[in-house]
Image (cartoon, rainbow, N blue to C red; front, top):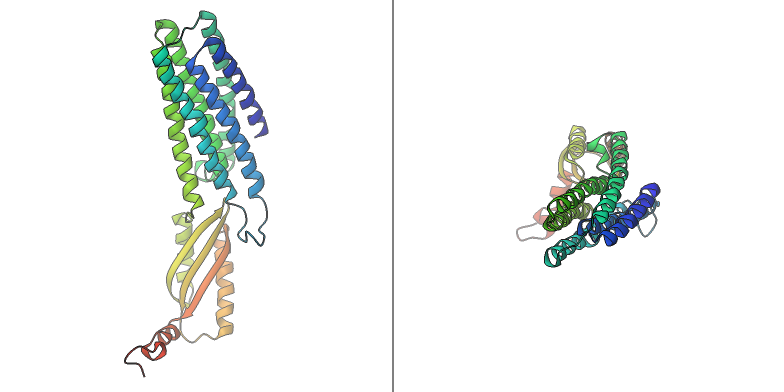
Length: 306
């Protein structure tokens, strides 16, 4: 990721210089895009480092959600620094026009060509990493890797849009093509920021484990001979590879306290083996007969009780 950060900074500087020299709104939009990508690389580096910290008294469930928080900041960065600036450049070009010379077009297209090669290589590396982590279904679970893939993909598409806008401007002499390219880049970045931000928000506020894992846990609980019924099952992702599991179960009548403790330990171990990411498992076990007795009118003091 440090290599990607360095590459983004160099590309951002080249695009900015080329954009100012050529007076190209599309190239300046791409410079803002690269600056946003560079800031996001810093956010993701912080996410990777901070999320690995072990649990402590203040955060007993660990720091796994740090990845989700920094991914949210990355989405905000894409929206503000990339999307909004690109919209501004496109609107400004439509309002005032742009006077580019042939040398400016050539310099801008060369910079964008180099950027396309660099961004394309970065995207291929990210996709290779996704494949190494089990393909799209597994690899894209990592918010940091998901953000990198989204950034690199939009970077390649953004460079293509900028090159197309500059080429059409050069051929037709109409700045509207470059302005439209800037607006398209802005719309693309805003959409990507929205998708990344929505996913990070869902994970931050307590997203449940995937339905397949929850189904396996529920099936395991129902298969236990000591469990009469599963009253409730709650799951929440506390990190990339950690999930909190809480279940309320009714036990069959007649189990003594030692037997209940033995059953609870065995069930927790079974859940941990069945769903390895279940790092914290909590069971609220009750005896149905005892619970009904505790809720009876005689026990609660309601009218009609003995």
